[in-house]
Length: 164
Image 1 (cartoon, rainbow, N blue to C red):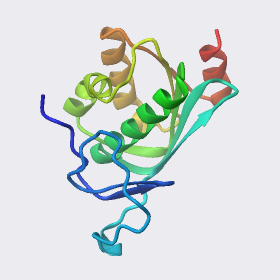
Image 2 (cartoon, rainbow, N blue to C red):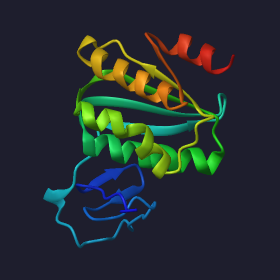
Image 3 (cartoon, rainbow, N blue to C red):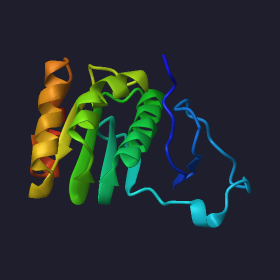
Image 4 (tube, rainbow, N blue to C red):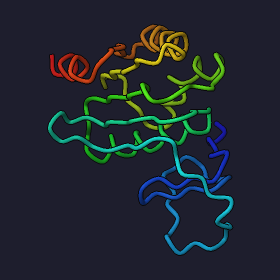
């Protein structure tokens, strides 16, 4: 199986990834000078562990492309494994997805290749109508492959579903 490769240079919190790094959780040191500052890109999302819900929470902002989604999935899978998280919440309200249908179709398999587990419940929060088609398609594809994914219009509903 071909390793997944990060297609750009990213920084998110304390994690730094370069083009060509395999999705194996490689972390570069803060003093890595092998890449110029102009090549760096702040990720358009934040990922954190919420101990109250045993959940990985992601908030997306701005334009989200396939490379951003791959980097987010890597980050989320690493945090989920570290804390044995049972749930995940992804909020797309402040984001606009710019990904292909083929990419969405492949996301459940990609998540498995990164270490994601099907027992995890995933709540998707979306108030951006521009994302409705893509997020709805992702829910359908994921559910057809045995993942437990639901779409919500607010965080309270999503957290209530995760805890039921």
